[in-house]
Length: 329
Ligand code: BT5
Image 1: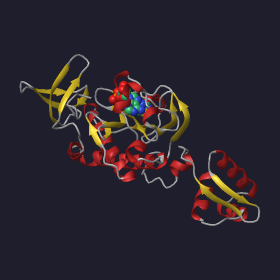
Image 2 (image 1 turned 180 degrees about the horizontal axis):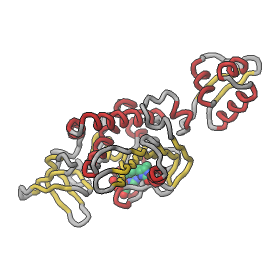
Image 3 (image 1 turned 180 degrees about the vertical axis):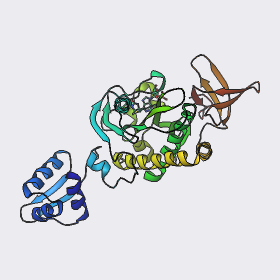
Image 4 (image 1 turned 30 degrees about the horizontal axis):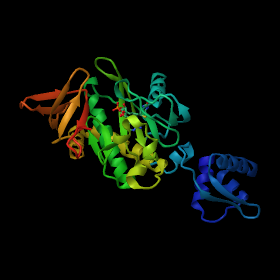
């Protein structure tokens, strides 16, 4: 009902009477009044004039269902199951629980804050309240488990497209799938797989996007390597707008991948890569390697030529690029 009321209010520039609203929405005037009050509590600014009725002044930048679903142009994602929370431990953990309980592909979990946001390899992801997009999506692709690593590349390509579409921002991808602006991390992707030997049960991916943090709000230990969309653009950014573009563009990229295969994804990934062709320091669980990043192969391995001209295929590791002072950062 709230979505209906908001649609009517946003389509009319002037006041609209309670009577007309109740006609258009098919409920009583008391129901309209109650729903309007509830919208006001959620942060919608709605002017109320006893003689003329209601007028929408402004919408909140909160990740509310009403806002997210307003004109959302996805095929499936977020349309059937969209779970929004104020605070959770980790949206990935919740999405996995929804996966285990049988929820379908395209189920979305989003929170204003994560208490224990997760990065890759057991690391932490800083997810302060109201400042970013902390979201997970459930996928059930019919692909062999050996192809599952390709999904991370699909997501990174979709994410770059989304930032371009929503804000005209040109982001780069650092292998495996960090999203960078001006060489600093604006978003990170965590892909988790549940599979049998021959088939994928489900994939849950989580993306954390720094939207409205100021530089000083990042914890000191990674402040120099982190940025937000606000820092990059110099003004506050609508999280809802970015989030809608993410769902739309990543879903589209994923569907293209399922229909057309991996080739064009990896080509687009390479065009947006900030890693290829660069001198890199790779920190792996057991060792370190210095060299030049020369390619990414079809399985998603990074190919590095070391200083003795030997080639290495890297599956797991963290890449540091040389900064302007010639140091790895
Ligand atoms: C990632 O890990 O980049 C994956 C991050 C995925 C987060 C999303 S949020 C929604 C969903 N639910 C979850 O629980 N997680 C996902 P990794 O490449 O391991 O990067 C982690 C490292 O980045 C940390 O060790 C820090 O150094 C740094 N870091 C942590 N929080 C950051 C932030 N907000 N912005 C930039 N860097 C950050």
